Image 1: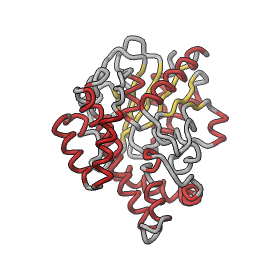
Image 2: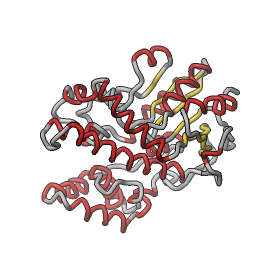
Image 3: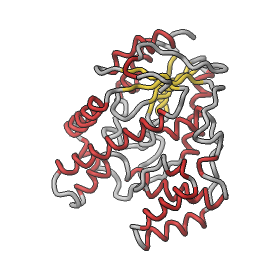
Image 4: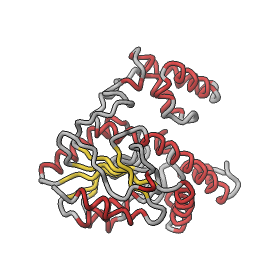
Length: 324
């Protein structure tokens, strides 16, 4: 993390870029980055928020994705929310195109974009302009048939990916069938590693329009925030929101944190709601570790650390970025 303990950083040291105009604020789920971004936007009238969250793009998935409230969205311009029905697949390429259009419109108004979220691949697609790979439907169909014939085959597919493209495999959860199949589809179909497209996931170009900052919290603090957030979401009607979703969710939407576990509970696969929530907390904590690992690789990110309320980091963030 820039060679420093993120818990000791008290001011934002900007990574020098060619034309640093916009800001990307990253961090693991439940780290408080959305509240911090909203606080920043309230103080800077030329700032508009751009969500970088692979699940907030879905309509009707509001509580469980911690989507901004209607009041917050009316107060501050928000972009890239509610772009698709949860029955639709949503791709990185589509997100990249939507983000580029939103940022161009923000610039056209003379404003600055504040990207906020924890979906690392989506963020890198926008910040670094990744050259996204094409599609090879025949290859994909064969891979999907393998999984349909024997669900346990996903483990063998993951190992196949790890052998062919270790960099891509390291960024994918071993049980995430959709992403494993996609990475193998590209690797086999193109003859090039999935991780090699664009500047490459391990390349971090310094010439970018974005400054990058990250929120760091101690593990115990983040773990507690994840558990507390699920409790608050359930009180706010999360289970009813899941119950109201269409019956045939896309593969992407069906894997959303919390939603998958509550759907299993409603289908009778999990005996009690408490067990479902415990599963969701455990998976979310694991996901947060992977998010941290992803972002730690990027040397352009300056980390802002606290053991208390992440909103306490606002003066450090505001002090630097308040300059046009």
